[in-house]
Image 1: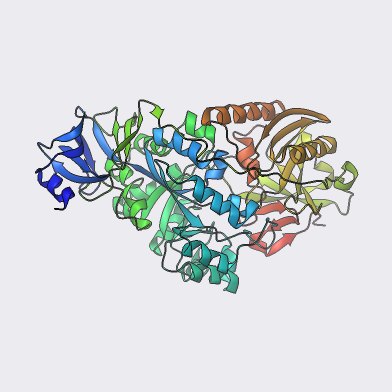
Image 2 (image 1 turned 45 degrees about the vertical axis):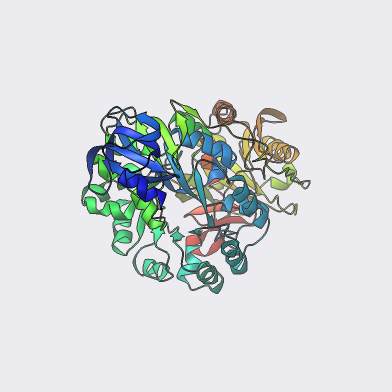
Length: 568
């Protein structure tokens, strides 16, 4: 006898029955008051008069499918997968699709292997994308390069479920054989994209590769065009880069677009998870903006499940995995608060208390960086070679930077222009790039530095004076990676990240407290933007327009690559 069918018929007891649930049906977009019977981790039946070995009375509160994040980089939380899952589960998240290209840039294939192993046995399913851009472009220096053969191996070993974001969009557009080789090596899997500002015929060329999603839309018309060309649109709402409200008219003008749109995190921090939330926070934003609650719920449940071809989740229906959560609410409204969460029919979180982690089972590797070649203040000094220089322009709330042209004599902290230095850290070559950045607000002294610098994660320091910058880089090398603030030769703050210079083994609360402390130290230096370490981490990412900086110097991917410091 097939027992799940017997449970569905009501002939034998279920393992678990949720009684009196107000089910939020993402198929019909209405509520249904019913019992939900669970057997062997799956939903067996929905209806009346089911009996179970364990019974839970929902008392008419809303029952929703487990929430799904369609694109995230777990490393950016600075936590291990287990500690990320611990806090994410409290917010109703039961599935995430993560791109591990951060740690892959730092450790190569062994980095992916660590993330995969560390994610086994967690109550949150973590499906990894094969890192398609290690390095992100030829203008970055990673620990190792992962080619098409490496991509093929990842799928053969079942380490990955989809192709991670293909960030080198110029290479795809121009028919580069290496980029296309990686896409072809992935085979018949979801191919996730990254195409900031790509439109028109270039968009056609990018999509001709089979890539069919994008999380980099920052303007509504860009999202409309990509949607019309068959892309799934991932509306990003992260710790520092927030496009959700800008792009929501895409759904309001035609609610049917929700079947091709999902909301994702991309990059979030431990502080964000603890203070703001995860996918539940995005749901609150959509509801506060007046979006139909069932449409909003679909975009963080059913749509990502269907895009990633995991048809066993994303809804509450017979035969689906028993991933669901009960709210404190009896309606889907903007108070949207998670009460209890089940994964595979097992209670994993209730009243802000989550599952226990066996730390020995998810132990992180001991990884030590060996960086000895630190430049001197004399070496990073810039001698005039012209009158006008390029400066990276940072704008709060967006990952896009601008190329500013400024008189060299005006490149001073009092004009909100600080020096920026990138030091290669994977091979200890001593190679570094030097430039300037506007928009952070660093005052007349001091520096901030980090080994979290997308995507190659070479050491990055920004400061008002050269002594503070060199002190910060030296401290990063001594710690083996992390976050640092300095004032001349004085270390004013530090937070070690011993796992590849990206993560630590602290609890979510401890990680958030350390990050808050570092943000306060940065604020003392008059850094005026929120989440300064997150914002600065993107200044090295060569595949985002416009001006960036790597260990090779200034880079503008839209202009073909390396750019000069002095314009004229």
